Length: 322
Image (cartoon, rainbow, N blue to C red; front, side, top):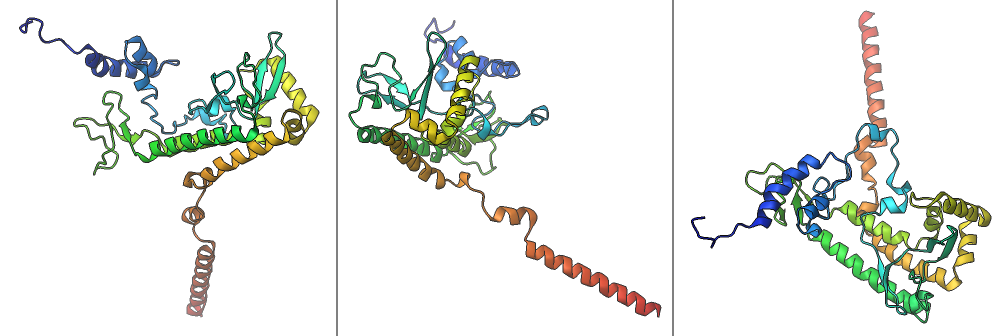
């Protein structure tokens, strides 16, 4: 008032730092709410809150009741396991529409709720005039296009991971930095008691690479046909009957994929697998077992020494008694 209207309050800063954090903390136990949805309702840019503050890329801690019916991640349907990954998108050369690459197969339902299973190497746009091979004249050109997109996406994910950006897990702070603290993972913001966690963790990177590999894995694609909660019971019944009819993965793939298509998928899977095999997150070090349980030879030697000591003590007691 004293400035006669020259000083205007920053409403966006006030809502971001004073309103959104406590509202997010209060609504966190409620299912179906997220910081992104709350930011949208408050008129803020939801893209800045695409990742919930509770996780920040870290694995969610399992509760005791969740351990009863715990299901390993690799057994989940792809729509749940790869829900938050960056999808691989391709632009059709024929209709110029950008769509997500569905993988080995593309499963859709007709208006009569019947199954329509086609090759994933075809454009998913129903109005495309030339959907085969995404409008490219040969499988070689399509493979070059997909390989280029894969290479750029993998490099982008690796760059994001090695940037080592950390964020504070306290919703009232929201610090984002690349600085390292001498106090470990404690937040660098004065007065904040939160901890710095990776913005893009090794687990997220590994899940992203597994998603790219699953797109070109024939056996994985056949297993996923009968999984998923979004498919109707009629479609699931037809898919189960289809897999039972052909029996093996090879028989089903021969029915819907040409020989050139299978060679293309195999080459692309090999490209992604080379990156996956170079990842330390994909392997368990041999020294882990010795660190956990100790060396077998050392344990055996220790047991023999203990037995010998006990025997010598027993003989000494007998001689002393005599």
